[in-house]
Length: 140
Image 1 (cartoon, rainbow, N blue to C red):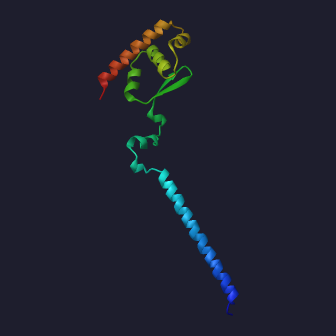
Image 2: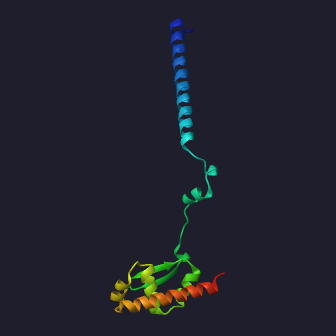
Image 3: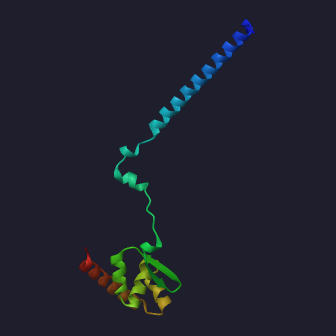
């Protein structure tokens, strides 16, 4: 059965509308890509400093040397620093870890350890001097 001229006209109109809609959609997509490309920057066009800000580094418990203080633990990543801390006396190590890793001041440390504030200060400064000397001697 041959389609009527009316049916052929309707099919042609529908075909035209479909093609027009697809062409308009393609144009909209191309405009969107153009707008997006103006706002985006390729990683290859960025400097190393900017690219490194997007990077993450996984850290695992095995990467740290663990020191235990009262009810908490402190993880030190540097092998050299952890070795220097291990060579300190227990009191100096505890004071340095509390001061630098637990953000406590000399007065708070003195109250916690039942020492004078000046004793805490003296142990902290002498411990730092030892760590500095140890790290300079063993630096690779």
